[in-house]
Image (cartoon, rainbow, N blue to C red; front, side, top):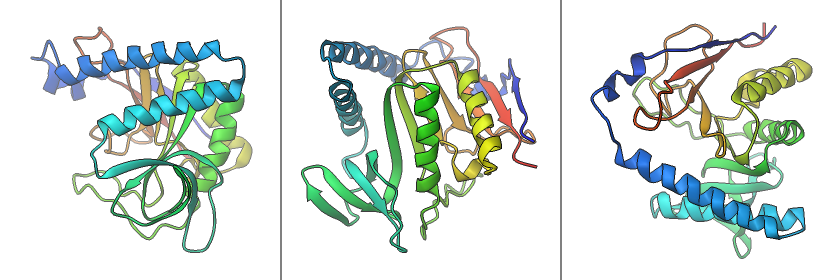
Length: 250
């Protein structure tokens, strides 16, 4: 069975910040978040849902292009592996400009699984239905054969599947997302690593959830800890670093 539990008040990882009262990067991204939300609301002028969705994808793509290194590009299309297995349509694919790809038209490409840095799905409003369909998509993406294994050499777990990210402008509480992931794993009898997002960002709720695998924050050495979340740095609020933990299928 799957089990979820939350350990609140876990302050040890914040020790490095206890003498900091202001952080430039945090302040910058706080303002960027507000700008993205404001632009997102502007798309509500449109009547058709697809127009709103395309507009918000363009916002995320613009954000990524201005904040990622010049060597990384943001594409849309499909991901193909060495066995000719495909991912289906992916909102945004991040990959190195030094890696090959198959151009189709404009920014639409077929990317190779070993060249993809991350797959990003953009949601205007992350409902339970949208989350479940995205988990289906991530299961396909993470099943693609990948010969390149990413290793930080700092204690982080090796990445042998394509990292998957949900970027939502609106969405539920983090507990709702975790419960939905729990239910999906139980219903489909699939291990978390086979479908679970590596990160979930919900802009209007001011939080993100990421895997407790060492790629975002140092690993919390607690048995069964699968997720951790971030509610803001000390100068933003009194929120502290929390641990969201799940045990795998038994």
